[in-house]
Structures are given as structure tokens and as C-alpha cells.
Amino acid sequence: MKFIASLLLALAFVSSSVAADAIKLTRVYEKLATQWPVALVIPPDGSQREFLALQRGQILILPKDEKSAEAKTFLDLSSRAMEAANGKFEEGLNGLAFHPKFAENGLFYITYTQQKPKRLVISEMKATGDKADEKSERVLLEVPLINWNHHGGNIVFGPDGYLYIGVGDTSKRNDEKRMAQLNAVMVGKVLRIDVNGRDHHNAYGIPADNPFADGVDALPQIYAYGIRNPWGMSFDDKGRLWLADVGQDLWEEINWIEKGGNYGWSYREGSRPFALRTDTPPEGTKLIDPIFEYNHGEGLSITGGVIYKGKAVPEAAGAYVYGDFVLGKIWALKVDEAGKVQSNDLLYTSPQTPADNPKKKPSVLVKPTAFSANAAGELIVLDWNGAVYRVEK
Ligand SMILES: [Ca+2]
Image 1 (tube, rainbow, N blue to C red):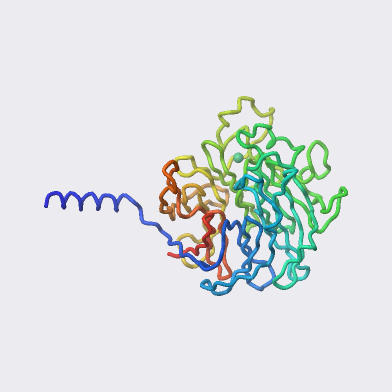
Image 2: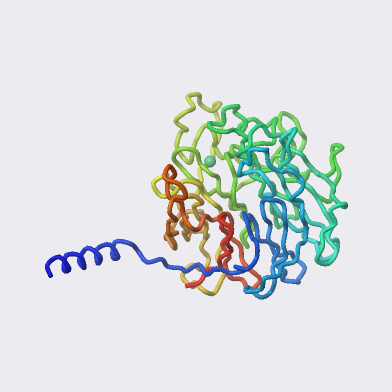
């Protein structure tokens, strides 16, 4: 009897020591093959179609019915050998964005990696109805890469109509080639181009107010620099660009990106000096700190999110909802107009899955790769393990 009482006490202790999740993730589109989803995007054409980009090169149009087994294949580039032979997991199709005038011109943009030589390709294609025309591809830009990781690839149109491209530092670790502060290369940067223009013999234009538009001492495509590995870029309704920058050993960051801003890497990791770099920035260098950072006790690899506008979780209204890829957590960050943090609430912690072999550590069930609103305005979480979840309470 005493044993049972103490067992009950122990169970009570366990359950009360684990905070209940503030949200529930409901699996949707379970009957579809949605391996390695990286983006869910709705074009600005009033159709409310949800396009799901899968990293191995496919883009699906999701069915209206979340329980349906039938999705339309909008584009299939899975034969293009985007990854190196040993299958490095950051490579593949990593970005999708629709032209602001997609309803009239059918143009959309993708980013994907190619090998031999390794590079990040930013391309335009044209859609007719529910089909992309692969033959219409117009390569806008190719950014040379020297490693399989840290190349970003998220793209988003700003309210100014220009295409913003997040590119990582292409270093395995430590920014060892010192690329992020070097404005003679396009890696470790946020780029901004005009897909409607044609300048400098390029297949795109340089916005006249890009910070280095004249191309003297810095590449004209660069909009912001000092970035390590951007994953998750979104504009809010006030025109601010939120960018999550994946950290190395200690700090994961959320940044508000300003034109011409230097976000510190690799002089800094988060708001602190980067421990493995001993040199200091040139005198007068202004490094912009993240608006929020968390350390590697809380998570290990940030996935940027969006401003929550759903109805299901009223207390998250107006918060920036984002997550951690490795530990499977989701938070709601609230900041004031100056970017000062008001609260950062943990909404969800993924259950763990057993290790698939004895030498491996357990993983998490939900590894967020992206957050987006669906056609009804509710928040969708894409999961690296191949699932699509809708956020409920
Ligand atoms: Ca930074």
C-alpha cells in the first residue's frame, strides 16, 4: 500500500513537472506523400491554393479537403540531382515565392541547389493553371557554394515588389573562409533583386536604393550582411523583414533586417563575441544585435516563423510564432514597436521518438521546418519527418 502511494506520488510529480502544451498540433493531409516539406505558400491571385514545396524537388497543390489522398503535382524537379551523392540534408529545393502580379503573369520563383559545381540557383518559371512549365525556366542568379550546408535559400517578395533571398555563409563551421563579412561574395547575406528589371548584364535588375547599388567595393545585390544561415524569412504587415539566423555553438537569433545592416556573424554569435574568432571588426563597424536570442539550453537550431493571425489560439494573436528544429519546440514571441521583447512563451514541446538504433540519441517527433498560414488563416507547421500539422488549441 505504501509502495502504491509512493508510486502515485511519483506519477503525480512527473505529470505536474511537465508543463501542458498551450497548443495542439493536428495532423492534416496524412494520406499525402509529404516528405521533407520546406514551404507552404499561397499565391496572391485570390485562388487560395496552398502550394507545398518538398525539398526533394516537388511542389504540390494541396487538396481543399485535409483528408484527401489526392494532391496535384504542380512541378517535379526530382530528377535534377539537387543533392550531392552522399545525400546531405540541407541541399535541394529550399525556396518558393510567387510574383506579386502572379494573377496576371503566372510567374513564380524557386531556389534549389545543383552540383558540379555546387551552387544555389534562383530561377523564374511560368505557371498555367495548376501546372508549372519547366521549359519556361529562366535562371536569374547562381551563387557558388563550397559546402553542402549553410546556404539558406528561402525567398520572399517584399512590399516593395523586390525579391529577398537569404543565403548562408557556405561554411561547414566557424565561417572559416570569413565569407559573411566579405561583401565581394553573395554568401552570408540577404540579397535583394528586381525580377522585372535587367541591369549590369544580369537577368534581373538591381533596385536603385540597394545599399551598394553602384557596385563599388561591394556587390550590388547585397541588402544586408553578417548572416550565418538564414532559415525562415517573412514580412509582417508593417513591412518589417523577420529573419531567423541559425547559430553555431551557443545562440539562435531572430533579427529585424534593415537595409545595409551588418548582423554580426562571424564577429558575433547572437549579441556576444563569437568565441572562436579572435580578431575584432574594423573601427567604426556597427553590428546589429538580434531582437531576440535563445541559447543552446533551450534549443539547437532555429526555424523562423510568421506573425500569428489565426483564430484558434487567441492569446498568440500578433505574436511571432517560431520553433526549434532539433528539440521540436514552438514559441510565441511578443515585442513592442521598438523591437523590445515583452514575452516569449513556450507553446509546444514535441514528444521524443525512440532512437532507431542503439548508438543514436532519441530524436523528436515534430521537427519544424517552416510556419505559414493556410487559406483559412490558421497556422500550419511543416515537419521534417514528413508531416503537415495545423495549430489548434
Ligand atoms: Ca547575428
